[in-house]
Image 1 (cartoon, rainbow, N blue to C red):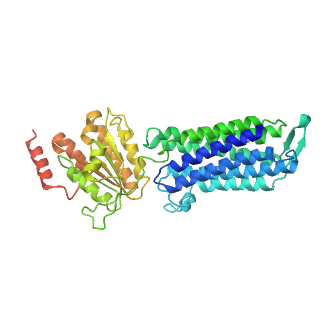
Image 2: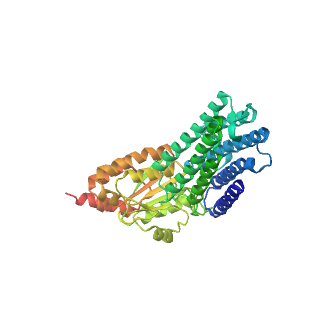
Length: 425
């Protein structure tokens, strides 16, 4: 009766998980597919474990060993699929299964390749390593494994518990995501990691010592499923605000051809030219990120930017698309995360004057100098509009020295700068 109750609860939670999974929205189908496979294997591993208790004559050593081998194989396939999910999360440019295992740009295997190799060895070990069951007092039993096999299982468990969480934490430290996304992603990892620990303790370690605590293990596994169900309750749990997505493509030629790896200074008062250049690029194949002092929905309506992520530079507003002006490192991390996720990206940094007000000119100049290196490394493009009347002539001169003046800059802007410098004492 207890086993039937556990099976019913597992199936109920599994159904809940898959219903939520169908509601999730993301621009990266491979990420969602990897998560779906992980959930399926997660449930299959738990149900295969429960199968031992539901099969008549479950005390038979052969049935118990067969079930444990099946469950172990599901567990390690789950570890591989979780690795694929994490890869698609920390590397948004990954769009094919091939990209998960082979970095074509750098012509070398990705981190998932050796990780998968270790777990494939573990699967082979589970399938072929001899094991035995010894009856003990009070109707219990004890697993007898070779020490080499226990060491291999421990290695796989430690690899899973340490490698991907470290990568996720490093990614979240650098990425600018929606407010609740880091928490939900960490909850997913917490649920899976709890399951991995419970599997090793209650299915390998304790049975080897002659202790049967499967009931506690089932309870922990169900709790882990509950944590995952809670984490994916939001439709956008897989959707990053800075996912590179191009706008509708225009078959015409670019009006403003830009050199990859360049940072352009645009001297103008209102910023219309900057947005025109930016709009020209994102409608001709480039992935764009707009950081501006204007309200995002107004920018979307005015320039038709329906898919391009827009971050609002604001000190007072708390929302999912807000980026604080101080310290300036926050702006740098957002841009670095975005350009590293797309092979052809363009960033519009509108609000240099606002950044200077909340920091100082030297800090903002350092920020721009660092960004020029980041932009060059990733062959991206940076647009920096500045009003020459809002800055000191020497500050404008320093900006012009570090950035490339856009060749298509309007004559009025240049004449305004010359007049401003001539009028300065």
